[in-house]
Length: 147
Image (cartoon, rainbow, N blue to C red):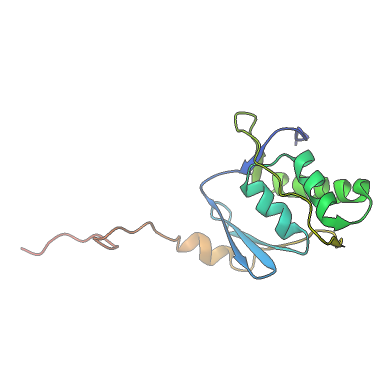
């Protein structure tokens, strides 16, 4: 896989990638593969910044302002996570986007805990077998009217 441009804005790779924040965790689901991911620790902040179309460089800078650790250590951890997300086809660089604003420095910097990501395939068969359907007011499934 080609290395991402650190200056290019990032975005979620497709409409088939969904995420939900659950307290201190983000669950990301790829409906194309049925694989889901658990993002924890500083990975939650990284995903939030990807949602704002920040670049890898912008994310590393924002994280260095928020966390108490050497900027090089943070940048290495951020780049590794973004590479893993890109390899899983969850995020892509999109130079056509305007990079989102990174949050300003926190009043008190927290200890840096490297991003944690876990990949799960245990529900793959179920997610691929019974996809979640877009439903409108008429409901699903659509049946023919009785005569």
